[in-house]
Length: 152
Image (tube, rainbow, N blue to C red; front, side, top):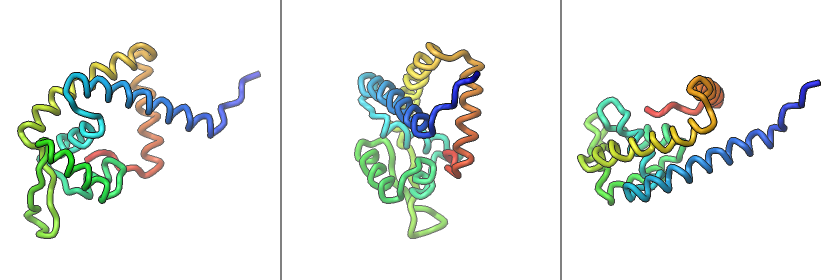
């Protein structure tokens, strides 16, 4: 006789708790080693992955799963720290693009290595490489089903 699957409430609760635990772990390490919160790292990472390291605020918002207003506020804070800058959008005078500064690129490169090490430490302790790939495929499938856009 097989056990019943967990309730949907337990299932989502476990996912949320896992996200919080991983977020807190990586955030603490980034703060200690780079003086950078994960809330700042993530937009830098998304902009850094863009084709020319530039995104409209709306594109960044979609990739982060945030509102345009909320994204604009975090961009202003990150720009105030000298890691991002706003540039005019050549194709739309009303819009601007967000770009990495040289300092932002250096910070992203260093913090990205720390992020990878900390996530590897957390994941490798519990999952084999095959398990990690399989879990990632399942999570990606669920995200695709929700319509959440993949980071630009």
